[in-house]
Each structure stands twice: as C-alpha cells, then as structure tokens.
Amino acid sequence: MAEFFKLFSYLFIWRALIVGFFTSLCAGLLGVNLVLKRYSMIGDGLSHVGFGILSIAVAIGIPPLQTAIPIILLVAFLLLRIRENSKTKGDAAIALISVSALAIGIVSFSLTSGLNSNMSAYMFGSIYTLTNSDLVITVIVACVIIILYILFYVKNFAIAFDQSFAQAAGTKVNVFNLATALMTALIIVVGMRMMGAMLISGLIIFPPLSAIRIFKSYKSVVIASGIISVICFFIGTFASFILSTPTGASVIITNLIAFSTLSLVSLLKTSLLRKARRGV
Amino acid sequence: MLLEVKDVSACYDGKEVVSGVNFTLDAGDYLCIVGENGSGKSTLLKIILGLMRHYTGHVHFPMNRKLRVGYLPQQTQVSKDFPASVFETVLSGCVNRRPKLLFYNKSDKALADENLKKLGIFDLKRKAYNELSFGQQRRVLIARALCATDELLVLDEPVNGLDPMTTRELYKLISELNTSGMTIIMISHDIENSVSYANKILHMSTFSAFFGLTEKYIETEYYLSNTRSMRSDIINNG
Image: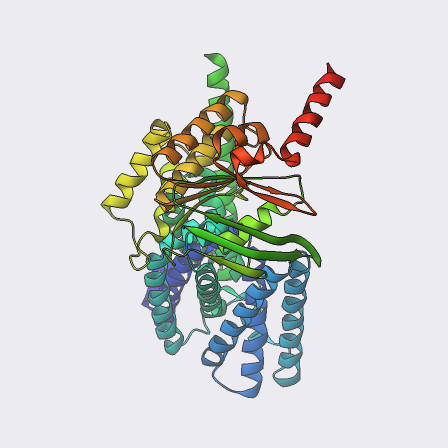
C-alpha cells in the first residue's frame, strides 16, 4: 500500500490522472449523442485513422499531436459525409478506411523504428509517454469541448431525438452534426496516447450505454454518462497501478464491469416491477 | 396568402414521384393531401418543409420568409431505448423559437406545459417517452409540434395506427386548433374524414392531381370513384 501512495510523488502520474480525467469526462459526454445517433462506428474509425496519422508523424519526426489534430478534423468531416450520404455502404466504407489507416500506421512504424514498444504504446496506450505539452493541449481541448457541449446541449437533444423535426423547425442540423464529429475527433486524438488507439472508442461507447440502462431522461443520462466515465477511469487506473496492468485496457475492463452490473440491475428492476404488477 | 407551391416536381431514384404540383394556402386553411401510396405525398411534404433540396419549381411563404413550421413525422426513427422524458421531448419543440438563444427560458417551459395540458397529457410530464403507448406518443409529438409554431402545422398521417376512439379525438383536436387560427396541412389515407374536416383537398395520383375546395372535390371523379370502390368492397365483403 505504501508503494501505491508513493506513486503520487511522481509527476507523470499526476499528468496521467489530469489528462485521463478530462479525456474521460469529454468522451462520456460526447458519447451520448454518438451512441444514440448510431454513430459509434465513426468513433472507432477515427481512432484507427488517428493511429495512422500519429505513426506517420512519428516516422517523419514531426510533433505528433499538433500534426494529427488538423488532419483528423478533416477525416471526421469525411467520415460523417460517408455515413450520411450512403446508408448501406457507409458502414463498410468506414471499416475500410479504418483498417487501411491501421495498416499504414503499422507499416510506417516497421519501416522506421521497427515494431517495438513505441508502437505498442500507441496501440494500447501508455501513461509514461505523456509530455507536458500533451497535458496543456488536452486541458485546452477539453475545456473548449465542455463549453461547446453545454452551449449546443439543447440543439443536440432535438437533433438526436428527431433530426427531420429539428430541421423543419429551422435548426442547422448539418452544422451541429459536424461540430459533434469534430469534437469527437479531437478528444480521440488527445486521449489516444494514454488509452491506446485500439481502446479509446470504448471510452466513448461504454459510459453512455451504461447510463442508458438505469436513467430514462436525456439530461440524467448525459450527467450520469460523464460521471460513470470519470469514476471508471479512476478505478481502472488505480487498479492498473496495483496490479501492474496496462492502464487503457484496465479502464475499459472497469467500464465493462460497470456496464454489466448496471444491465443486471435494470433487468432485475424490470422483472421485479413486472412481478409486483402481477401480484397486485 | 400563406404558402404558394408552383410547378413543383421531384425525382426519387430517377423516377418522377411529384410532377407539376400547384396549390396555394391562406392563413387558417385546413388542407388534406390524399392519394394512393407512392403518389408522392410524403415527398411533397418534405419539399415544403425544406427537408429535400432536389426539386424543380417554387415553394414560398409570401408573408413571412422565416415561417416556423411544426411538423409531425409519420414514423419517428426514435429508437426504443432513447432516453427522453415527455417534458424534454415537448420542450424540444421550442428548439428554434429564438435561434440566437441557446437555452430554454421560462416562457418556453410555460409553453410546453400549456401544450401538454392542451393535449391532456400533463400528468405524463415526468414519464419516459419510450414507455408510453403509441397513442400517447402521438400526442406528445403533436404537443412538441405546437411548441414549434403558432402558424402552420404539418402532419404526416397523424392517425395511422391509432384505434378508432383516439382517432376521433385527434381529428376533433386538430379541427379545434384550426378553428383557433392554425393553418393545417395533413397527409391522410382517410378520405371520408378528410372531406368532413378539411376546407381544401389536394388529391395526388401518378398521372394527374386535383386541388381545390372540398365542396368541389366531392363532385369529382377522384372522390366518387373512391367511394364507389369502397361501397363495392362493403358489398363484396358483406
């Protein structure tokens, strides 16, 4: 236990905790609309594309995060277009883009530094690779996202609930959809170093699904999703310190446990309610 | 004049589904759009609502370019597990009342309450939308549409899938709204009720279309052939 507390004297631990807090909070909030609008695939696609871009940036020797951000925004825009224009082929197209980016990333790593621990850090995440500039960028990006999220909240609900109604009422639906996709792209690139390219989309998809199990109004789901995401992050991270397991994977497993528990609770609740009704 | 639709044509998958539709609406009109399946009724509605951009001809609102429209979609793609309370849903009708304002204020909330009462679902306010019956959900969505507009209500088959009792209540309600000054555009399969409530009828069919006052419509072949076939159905089945 003493060793566990000793960890907190290291700067890199604090860096990881701060980056993780902001990333998981934003992911939990943005995830609600992505899951409800059936855009989960876009999150997954973006994380793989992000991996591809970062690995090329590392290969050429340019600052990874600063390079990745503008490119990933462009990709987010494209993926959204693909998803909305062709209903049937959109899914396949996103999967194609995502595996291609992954392959390009792996090849570019193997050509330059080889398939070493550096690549594994990008794919599965590592808290040791975070730099001070990563920390600053994450906090800035997260604050911008949280502010925009609150400002767009009302429109986002109307659009997620019924897009054609919102459009008929005069809401610029495309603008808000794009904004959500761009914010998701940003949080994915920023959180990827720590959570890993293969795992970051879990951070977006799990918390809202868990929240939906037990809450029935949009507002409560949004708040719960943010809170669940942050709690799971801290539990997963501390567990990973104690068990010396990779942080990203541990956080996702914590989310999985939370999701299963809440699903079970909601199942029990409905069956009890049904029994009670039958009894009366 | 509130709305003018002039020579509107549109294609869907390379096939012309709406061809050369013309009509005009005044404030306070009650228009029913009738016609068989695939005659382009829903497509025309989408064009009027601005949800479909690819069409030829003109749709315009001469009095007020930025008319707010309250829309009741035929089926919403709202998934079964979408978390939303009744109040959140109705309030979301106010989404564009003041486009610059980013949050709902007291008057929006009061309006949502008022419309909940108008539709007799105020006691469901805190319930989850997806746990309501189909008829109750329709009412919630009409309350939402009323929050969006004071002028024009557009309803795409509002009574589809409702039981006869709820259907009657809904027709009565829509008619009351119309009497209090709301302009109504409604797509309907139910020609009998359309004729008894609406003052104007647009009958769309693949080759031709009729638009005019209801009194004129009931004298046309569109209406007569329909009632004849209905009578022969009754005779055959009975």
